[in-house]
Length: 270
Image (cartoon, rainbow, N blue to C red; front, side):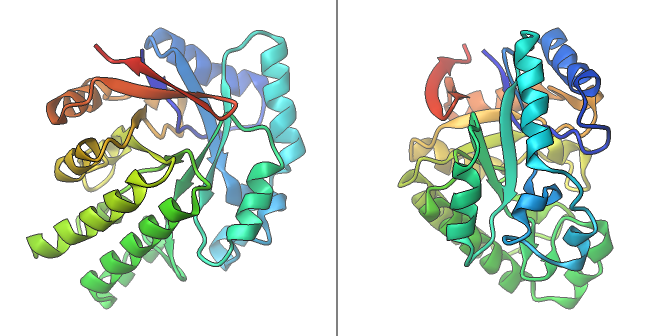
């Protein structure tokens, strides 16, 4: 059983033809559970959650068109899960919950891309890394991982250690382990799964998300996992899943989680 739950249509169109390029790619890779999780900030309906100049320029979808696309796919027996990737936004729990509960998502991914006005994974903000205190950035990032988990709004946390994307990583091992420990402690008390994402292999970090030590803590605390590619083009669907599966097995995982209309079910990865 394979999943690929974190994928985006934003570089193409919200059309059945483009969606089918993704589902066809998933089928060829033997991925039985495939989902699209477009960035929530693209939709007009999230304007009361996340606002800044970078995001506001990219808010151009309506959720009614998104839902209609999936309904059209399901009518044609295309097996695809409907999801959203929401930027976890501190102080906006009520607004996030209202949005999430307004739609019949199969699952919801929560991710952290912003620390205040700092877009940590954006090339446009890369110079900020040299201006900021690395320890403060990491602490603030993992503060959000903790409160994301505590909110219990999300089924999956996306690329849990995205903060390492540009290879800015604290050299202080004990500090890093402390962040991992408090993140996994909070996740273990929540319904939130962790994804093993192969997207990092296509980024400057050139590593999987999460770090092996972090994933080991997840396993030790019985936090379930899913597999994701974070594909933004059909060619990246299921990319490097051999490495993701190897990492999962190395730390002890033998099962991955699947979702359907919010209902979780575990399957063996062999």
